[in-house]
Image (cartoon, rainbow, N blue to C red; front, side, top):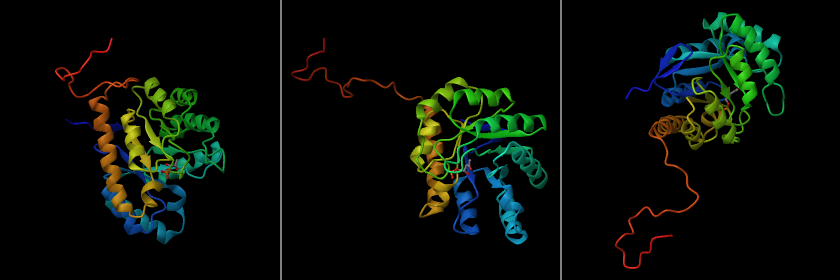
Length: 263
Ligand SMILES: CC(=O)[C@@H](O)[C@H](O)COP(=O)(O)O
């Protein structure tokens, strides 16, 4: 069964999006991205624009991977900075896609949701396809959609914590509220089971970076995430059993010597 992932005007086979930071070496980054099967790789404009040689080598690896690049506005703290960074990224990477980050708190790296909505509206007006990194707040999500975002990327947990889905209830509510908007959990994923949980909730994809880059074996972990995301998707499509409060035997009891039917 074909189950392509339609996102930002493209149709992809993989529902795993991966970041390009923090790997022990460029070679391990390349092998990890290949092992993950990801077809979208996030790239920081600041890194690419920084220092000619390292930037050029990095860019040539990414180009050879044949993936779609999703530039981000990592490190931006104001609407003005995020919009300017997005414009530079569009020029440098030749794409209208932008992963919009407007950070509101240096300690938690929590998004500034007010600035995010404002920046998203401006970037949509300028012709960008905005992938907004947001919290799991339902009203913020509504405002982002009203601002013209056709994709939402709520966090699982703060960036780099690896804590997984700290508010699965709210993430489930978002899925319920936006059945037709691609939803991607972005940030805070620590293990393949976290990614699988997001996919089982009906999320369209998962974006992660630290969990692979900082694993003892990043390439092995990238393969594990690939399998988990695919498994979670299959489980979602298959439809889980209803949860019950009371036990019910799963082996037949009729015909056993002392069986009594419950009243
Ligand atoms: C918003 C952001 O920066 C994330 O996309 C980050 O790149 C991935 O977060 P983790 O490193 O926690 O997976």
